[in-house]
Image (cartoon, rainbow, N blue to C red):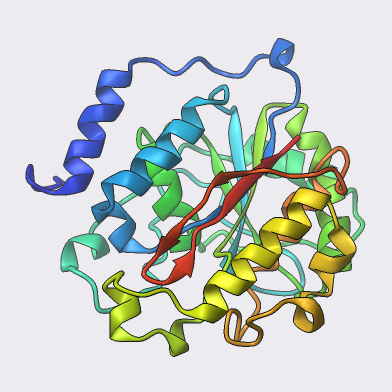
Length: 287
């Protein structure tokens, strides 16, 4: 679809074009990092500052050969893999937004080779269900459309099969080898996601809920220490619970990312910080 010329995303695409070619990954670059990103929703396309942060982040790394993303918006067991076909219709799993967002596409290339490699990395450790009718949900295609708007990179989505941090750390560890092959492994969630507890003032950006700022600061401190045990026990240790995560699927993709790290317990600095409509958009990468 054509984005109106006065829309912030149209301005973003102009900046992308001005940035010029993006050098692709080569084996000499070494392993790509794994990311945990706070993914936003269609209003991300209206936030010039955040789009700039995500695109700058993407350009700080070589252009990946492929992307494997685990999103908060696909909880399914047994472990499932999205369609490997090209140009599969995205999942419009949101409501109440401008109709233009329901016409947006993210038509990525065939991902058959990536699918085979993912299955190989998982090594038969768990059954994997192939869902050839399922496209990327908004936790995947919305941020990727900002980071890699050309949609010329094969992308697959892996389901979030459990909320248990230990199991997700082990899942991430099985995906670690993909990074050496130029695959960008991404856990997509939101560092705080207490939507039912936001006020109109929070949505407008006039205030920040205490439970969101407290949980965000606590998470940042544990990441800076590399304290994976504390992070895994967030339900009991983190201030702001359960308001920060009345359901936990937006925090748990972090453990896939940490599991994919060479050293899951290494200290971490955040790549993106700040708040959006009262929610923490803290995002980071691991080597």
